[in-house]
Amino acid sequence: MSNLQVIKKKIKPYDKKIFVSGDKSLSIRWVLFSSLTNGKSKAFNLLYSEDVIAAINAVKKLGVKIQTSEKFCLINGVGLNGYKYKKNLVINAKNSGTLGRLIMGLLIDAKKDIKIIGDKSLSKRDFYRIAEPLRKFGAKISLKRNSLPLKIRGTDNPRPIKYFENRGSAQCKSSVIFAALKTHGKTIIKAKKSRNHTELLCKHLGLPIKIKKLKNYDYIEIKKANKINVLNYNIPADISSSAFFIVLTALSENSKLLIKNVNINSTRIGIITILKRMGVKIKFINKRDYYGEVISDIFVSSSKKLKSINCPTYLNSGAIDEFLVIFLVAAKAKGISYFKDLAELNKKESPRLIWGSKILNMMGIKTKITKNSLKIFGNPNLIINNKIVIKNYLKDHRVFMTSVIAALSFGGEWKIYDKDSIKTSFPTFLKKIKELQK
Ligand code: S3P
Image 1 (cartoon, rainbow, N blue to C red):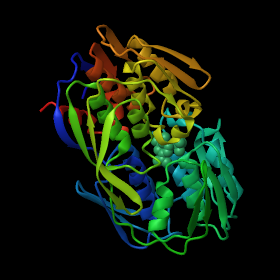
Image 2 (tube, rainbow, N blue to C red):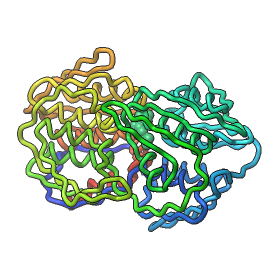
Image 3 (cartoon, rainbow, N blue to C red):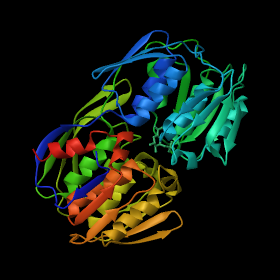
Image 4 (spheres, rainbow, N blue to C red):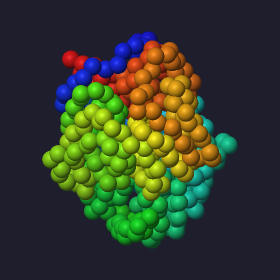
């Protein structure tokens, strides 16, 4: 497969129903929780992307038996303290910050040194943020320039901690929750709002967790788990993957789309709130509860008049993986849109605030970055006639997919490199685009 995607035409109007692949955050968490259960756990619609396969391979290396098939994945859990592995074990988290950080929490009681490595992009990301709280439990962690490769060795007797998570990082919060489940005593977390799948899974599994929700923070108390029951799960579609199709439909002419069975957990739908305020027509149809998560079909149609937004910062965490595509909507909105306090966006698989702004500039849209904020000067008549080349040396899946959506929405002649990067989170992305044109 050539690694280059060429797009020369806007997408034609469509009226379709699609199924998007499984939620990445939930898929990785399912693999990790299931590895600790006493018995066989089964998941349907697990996302088989490189990040999730890396999670499967990681727990396999810790002695967990896993059977994968197209339809389901079966994990033979080894119990809370049952990981078995050889000396000098190396775990490769590849491109996945979620795997790299979450698994460290599970290794809080690791008896031998374990090395965690990752790809070039992950090896530039901040692991100090999670080494710091895990060291307080008693783990020994050595980092290279605050990042990977790192070495972790746990402790026989982890101490409960008090932890203040103030970045809105679900990865740090979840990793500390995992460590706390293996620790005698009560761990207390004050966490800025972020996605809460780990807490919901703990509750569903009946684990000793208490959560008090305040306006901007959650107070979480976790005690040691005695055992974890099997976790059979039907993974809903990923809102982050659906986001590309929501934006494509909003920006295209005379189109309608129904996306089936999407996880619309309230901590993940910042994009919906933002787009609705910008004038995009979106409806939730057939909302239902699933083990604490909320699942719904999403209906979206073309939007003729888009308004700019001064995006409130409390929406940042719930839209953190979607900002690149949200910026495309701002490019076509009337007026100047303003996105503030997005330091975390530059700490993702690539510096996305900078890349997002660069792509808009290539499209002929004026932007202004000050510190960690971005102003986008929208143009409701935006049509692209020039040639655009996106060479993403950092291999960021979301930069690639956002560029494809821009090309199909606004026209121009695009050469977009790093097609392979979609394997990270959404291997069937281009197939789904084709489905819209059948
Ligand atoms: C994730 C949390 C977010 C998000 C990432 C997935 C998770 O990262 O950007 O894609 O599954 O916990 P942070 O926790 O670093 O904000």
